Image (cartoon, rainbow, N blue to C red; front, side, top):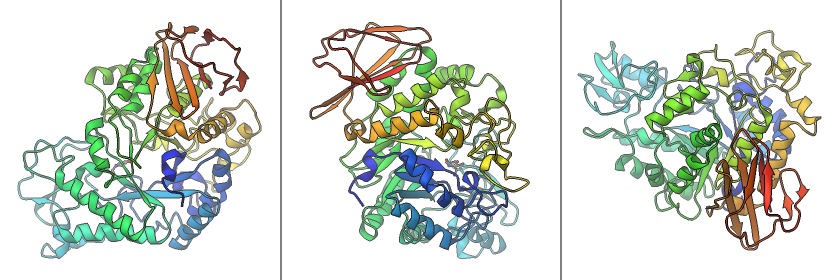
Length: 533
Ligand code: NOJ
């Protein structure tokens, strides 16, 4: 393991169920992921993030875990999992997976034992109330489906606490046995070779009356313990925080470098979309200006899309309305406080915009994550329930059954089959053979980025130019410098730098075109980006 490998890396998020079905049962599986590792390696991926693949009734696509210590039979076996670790490591790739600390499925035997026998020690694994009135200041996250964070349990005659679906009771972290069980869960998967954990929903572990039950000191204390155990017993493995919070609150999850190694940058993400729609760099500059410094060895994880709705929790109500107006014209596209669409449809399936969104992300500090399928511009299906519309089968080929995902007559979810997103238009094989494809652009971008570790560092400067629609960032480190220009507008931009640049770029990296010496003004087409080095 290279020290701090995650600080300059390309992550790739994938759902085992959606990637490749190796045994023809219509559901993706771990051997299927192994089949496709060479594809991921070729794309330049350094680390896979696997969504939960544990036994589960799949009411929240696996985030409702019924058994922390096994693999869901649809997806394979623990042996398959070990094989995947070996095959990934052989290719110098790392693998992280979800560690869902906050809750279990109501089908977990701990919860079932509590229902059967209220005197069972497992009852105290969960959070109960006789009235269902406590912690009234706590917001509801799944607003569209859950009327309350409490649900009544007739078997026990009490209410139980849940921050997500009612089928996902929250664990009681005031119980030391729960704390230990979850450390053991982490130990188990680390001992099988996993390189780290994407820790789900970490702000919500403890509850305290009179608070919003998020980001509590007790929660941070426990997470620091998780880190201590991981460092002591599995040195070099990493923890990545899913804390959908404002920058100052997320900052706390890095501690003094003794809590998480990485955390997602939630406030930046919607502002990239906002800036591109407004033709105005202000939202992106705002997000980065507000980004606090983080301890040495820590890193932000930056992303455009993931398996959830495009969350609009970290924007103001006005900004949220703007985003909904612009990006969710059909009410079916909205979900909770977000938008359940994929990158390509959000970008009007316009390849220049898709390229630009990624060229922006990759020109900023942090470690970028690619969401499976977005590297080929896959579409979504808003007729599917909840977030399932952005979790459809990966499209490998135009001319194979189910786009090469599966040989089964029926798949866990339908392959997208409406132009311009059907396999005939969007698939890996076709794009691999086309030098001007989006996939080949992504490969190029990944390569440019990885060859320049300084782009992952935190230092960034914004330059004012004569074009108000252009985002201009300067990234530099010893002896190396790049100016990234992003024309966010719908018309041509003529960019003249207001100050003397103090260096003369030699090459535009995205296209590989030499730059004329003495360059003063650059013309950028609508939604064109240029990386000048
Ligand atoms: C965050 C995950 O990303 C989401 O998919 C899930 O529904 C919730 N946590 C609950 O586990």
